[in-house]
Picture (cartoon, rainbow, N blue to C red):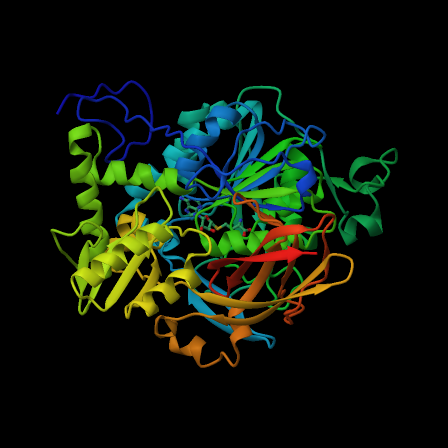
Length: 608
Ligand SMILES: C[S@@+](CC[C@H](N)C(=O)[O-])C[C@H]1O[C@@H](n2cnc3c(N)ncnc32)[C@H](O)[C@@H]1O
């Protein structure tokens, strides 16, 4: 081990330096974004693109411009923010005006979300996504150093994304305050800490042997000079209102209409923590912050049309506030539940500007395959694919088999086929598997896939039945890419859910759609306490949306309905949609269930 020459005061942790004493580089991985959904956008405003073979989603091509006038669309990104930020760099390095983050605090706790079920207000508390547990529990479990490793890499990318003079506001509590502050000092320079704001709140218990912890800290760092600061005011206290300012400051000081200038501690009802379970704002997302707090952050540190980002966005508080205050925004979270809650929250904002939901999809998976199983040399590629197949089969509890072209494994009486990371499972692929099943007289086929060719479900289930084979289609969950989730044995393969609709045509080229059934096949994977509360199939549905003219690329949200905290009912019939021209159309229906999982199905209609 080389001798490290200590030349400055800094925080060190195991893993910060390489063996030769050089600082470990943060990998800046660039992957293309896929647009998986657009919201509040008319198809006319969008360039029509022909889908590339085998690709479901458009790749984001960054041609929309940088202002709302040029067609800028706000962005909600589902994925690990390390890869997401790496991929944002190409277009957004030095472009973001304000980044606010409320990251995990290394509490060691398991956070849970509350899924509400059906029309009533029955609630069931569920463990939050496996990946998020890793961020909260496992990192702490493996020691502070892994938390610091995780955060310092991300903070360094945030610095690259900020414009000169841009602000970073890091929301933390006492557990990691000192550590993160030193990491930030090193990245930004210690004079770049402009304020440490205490956010004070009430509520909660009162311990007997120490002071109750009633504040969090916002560390405000800037990237060089010329930062934005819009002075804000708070209402005067009752005491000040009664006596005026005169006693303190003399006669010439009158109470200002706008109130008292904000100090570096924030308290009071404008920023009160969300305490009541029935509070209007409460989305039952653990660690959700109040809009009042974010309103101060966004107002104080950005201007109209500025670009604001929150890459640990949770329930989307920052994004909702940025939207309401006319800022452009980018949000990111790795939890499927967070993305779903945020999407609903934004949809509920009156005149919410168009936004898109993105992920790194097959590119992230290909990257993961390369990193995990190695594909550096061409000659090793086959080996890397075998290792990938063996890995997925093991997680599924299947044994690899050899000598077959399409069948990769065996589980009990069934043979198993595993789809590639970078392409949807196709009808041809399943037909080839069925042929092999017939040739070796197998009666049950399980197919595991990341994505599926459109229209495959009905076609293949019938085709398999016709050949006397039981076909089971299962989704490979995103969590297989998380070592921690794998190590804990938390991987569950859910069968594809199935939905039935009824399509009615009316005069004037009108189409009306009703949901008729929604089936989640593996109900045994659903915790008993949830299952016992489900009374009808529609109780599983939290949200559904329609793309009236699906173009084989991004899902365009043309009509949507969903349950909210206030209104638990769910319409099972859509509004009528009028087509301008007669013709054949593909109607895509997307259902999001109470676990935040998507099921999409396409239906062909001929409009006369
Ligand atoms: C404290 S919560 C944020 C709450 C948010 N401020 C709100 O008001 O709802 C932290 C969020 O970070 C997300 N998260 C943790 N690790 C992440 C990662 N590596 N990439 C993206 N999001 C992550 C979690 O899923 C969680 O939603």
